[in-house]
Image (cartoon, rainbow over all chains, first blue to last red; front, side, top):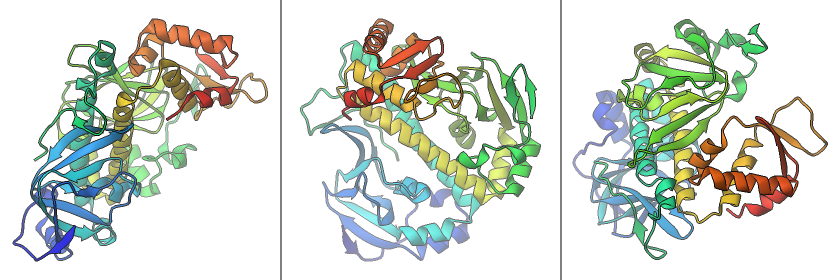
Length: 171
Length: 242
């Protein structure tokens, strides 16, 4: 990612449901980046430095699996990335890669955490976002069940390195 | 604690000796006191449906004791077990938080105690308490982690014996503390039927039966009803390559 200049305020799925004063506080912490298509925004097992918002462009969310990648969905403008590692303190389990050139808003993880730690309205909003992520994962399991594998339908038919799976726009 | 036919009922969260080891239950005393007042404690026999997939959310269930299976229906109409919920887990969170129908059916696998908290009260409590909100968020991240693990294992070309060994080893992380066992053995309680194990692993009951028979012949495990003993943990671990 490379730094970018400030831009006019954009909304994301978190800001849409937070009180105005909390949104203003978070906006003051923002910086901006540009990322090229193919660039990894969040890498599995690497602690992210920032909580990111996609302002423009698309990024795919995938789970690495024995040399293949299982595509869970495509994230668009307004999607917030890196929330789960910030909340749990654990490393990400997914890879998020730019499909197109992306413009991103970023808040350093520690500053984000310190700003929202004691705010119940943040956690209420965050749990709704996390619930949506979980539903996406469960939908994948539902439509690509092991019984499908037993019946001869493969999860990944393509050669290693290619991405297959359900594509769902998250925003 | 009250007891009925050797089933220990935990009536008061504040005096529960297990809460510190559980993600959601490890709360400050004032939060626990508030939860204590809004919860309804019930004991459910094996096979009780706590939530039904597609049902409008009524509230959450905190599983105090026992285990429950979370299952959903695949596109082909087959039952898929998403995961097994352990004591301390909060069930029905996604539906209650987002106000959407329950996305899976939750069925108890053994006699279980669960605390029910109605949706409106739980959401009000979350709005007033950052600590509760954080615990809920942490529970959901844990659930996401489990789901991604399942997605990953879908794409792996593990053999059935490897999957069965991996499952048994995961159960060994919650062994039974008391009861007969030889030195070096690990005693566990398995409340899933072979058909349910097959559903969970995406194979047939016959293949599971054959695999378990093979493990027994090699003296890796022995079983008696719902009680299993892991006799040779190293052998099972050697089988698991991922």
